[in-house]
Image 1 (cartoon, helix red, strand yellow):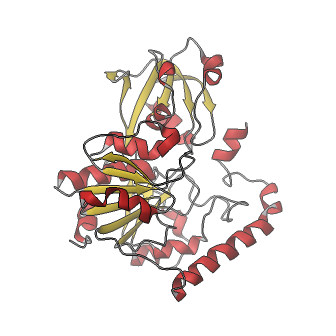
Image 2 (cartoon, helix red, strand yellow):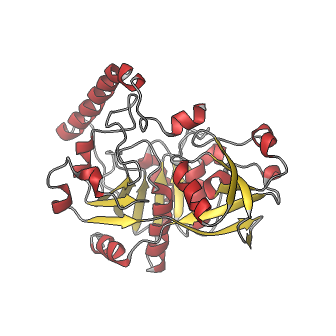
Image 3 (cartoon, helix red, strand yellow):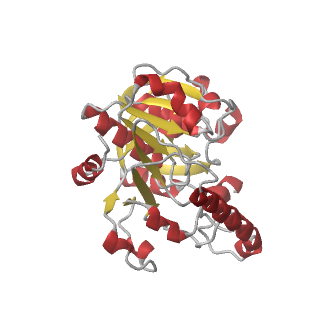
Length: 336
């Protein structure tokens, strides 16, 4: 399955990855050149008039960045902070910077215009959300709201904005895959780049073996573990119990963990239909599961057109509960 291969790129054993290794060297050269230009000051880093916290990773996806951003934004808002989230808005059609929400109202509801993850963040938080490939331009869209804290969604490789705190998430079920850079593997940067993080958060599985080959990382950096939880199910906005049996249809990376969570709740899984990450669903995508209950994630729900959101489509609410110890550490590092 093509989508299955893409969502698990670099996490299976295959000699084919090594065929692409020369391209990874070109990719690495580009990374090093970019960092070199920033270090020389040729490429400028800008300081925002807010405290900036970056949440990201060094792999292509599936670590739980979006649920983590949602949980952190809500905890900060509950403490009285005005929170903003800046995101690239991956695969969106609109090129210019766009204000998605102003902390009170969702202003854009089409994922094609703003991206599925920023829209999900806007729906599930009190944060103002803006998107743009140039996140400085995105910030200008919400600067009038004078946020205390700006969260850079997927910001670990976004060097243009200075940050006060770098949080790096690692999927404990998959670690760093084959250890190769894209396109031969799942890495956006060499594993050593993780040393740049101020905080490491292992998600889904408490697996410290990811760092065995990295001397001093676990001794020098605070490391926390968070496991995502299924917080309930809804259909058309109304809470419902989980179905007794269902197909799982999803476009999230590392869907296996989501499948195991649903199975552990006692749901008899008839089958799993996987699409590539950020897939916009169409009628034909549900033909073979027509008439059966279907379980999707909230991110999938964002990508479902309204006419497909019927009684058979059950949405699983998935989220993180950030430990108080981790939140207190983050709050203590804020430049306020």
